[in-house]
Image 1 (tube, rainbow, N blue to C red):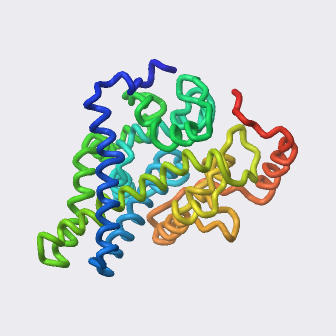
Image 2 (cartoon, rainbow, N blue to C red; image 1 turned 180 degrees about the horizontal axis):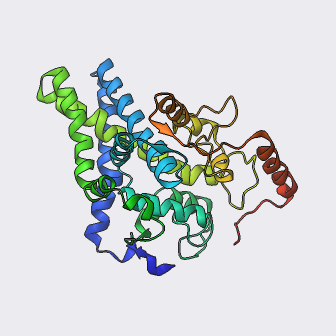
Length: 322
């Protein structure tokens, strides 16, 4: 297994500095920029709308595109939509599409066990993680500096999407797309304000600041929902549901639902579980742009999973075993 991954900790210091800057420092500068604008009262409805638009669009790119479509093949989509979702997902600064998909498929194959990249309980190489803070930090961010999959051409983990030339281009040009994710909101803001200051505001609100919030929301799915929350369904991992993250993360917070039924295009099964990603998929289906949706778990399957959970609730796992 270790032959298919790269030990990132062995990379040079400059690489870790660059990655830290991209993942934390630059987005944090955007966050500080937003706070500064708000404290000074120097913001407008347009700034807020720009932030909201790019947060929603890039969030959809991750949850509907990278996650449900490309990683789990929960449905099929017309080519223009596949390309759009792949580009928007790249705008979220979550590393290239193929890497994301390989990593996520391995995550489901080895959740909270050896072979999982971002479990709070164990590193990819099987080393256990002790202490709640260390567990949270590893699953939330520091795993990005430990291991990452090597994308092997022709691998079964990537073959289904690697055949698409457009997706190959998007994966190869990831760095260009991350830059475009800043330039595009900057240009839209420049058109609205007509000034250089407008460009800077766009880069802050729709670019770096938005990326800061989106990255941490996505990372909380790996950290928070594998440590805290409810577990209505019986799974061999520590995935849990968080209603707050369910709303904020566009449906991703219903993480135990997802791990119980990973191929379902819908994550929010109950009426109170608001799943924006599923609403988007339903809308695209009605417009004829999405088709061949995999079946959602019916009441009988869900009840069986709940019964299974109740049968095993007396032995809650502190550390998941193989």
